[in-house]
Structures are given as C-alpha cells and as structure tokens.
Length: 95
Image (cartoon, rainbow, N blue to C red; front, side, top):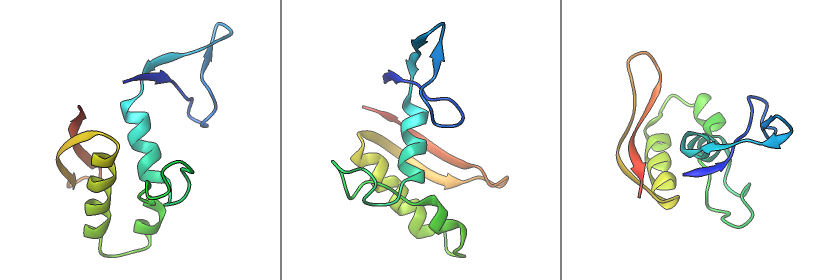
C-alpha cells in the first residue's frame, strides 16, 4: 500500500520540502500493534496495545489479538509468532 510516510519520531517525513510517499504496510502494522483500543476514533476496536503485553508473562493472547486486528485491517495472515531471538514475525500480506 502506498501512503504518506512517517519518520522515526512519528512526524511526517519531508524530503526536498514535500511529503514523502511510499510503501507503508510495515508502518500500518506498527501503528496497529502499538495502539491501544480506542485510539483510532473511526475504528475504536482496532489496536493491540503492545505495551500491555510487555508486562505480562503470557504472550499468547497478544498474538491472537494481533492476528485478529491485522486481519481486520485487510491482511491475509498465515502466522504471527515470536522468533527465538525475540523478534515478532508476521507472515502475511495485504489483499
């Protein structure tokens, strides 16, 4: 998906005085994973709340919620899992 891009601080990315547009799927996934429910006013049920998972020993509900939310956003998800090195692996694509 092509959309406006954000920089590392979350501000609009500007190049040569103009908004930068580019591949934004990973950016959308990151926002859904970080947002808590209710932060997207148009879609109040969207959001996983990654910060809540960090203080919990059971991460399986987080993975289930992440899969549901990403599917709600239009992705076809094959699998969501944590790798041995601790990275979150999202195996899927936007339809």
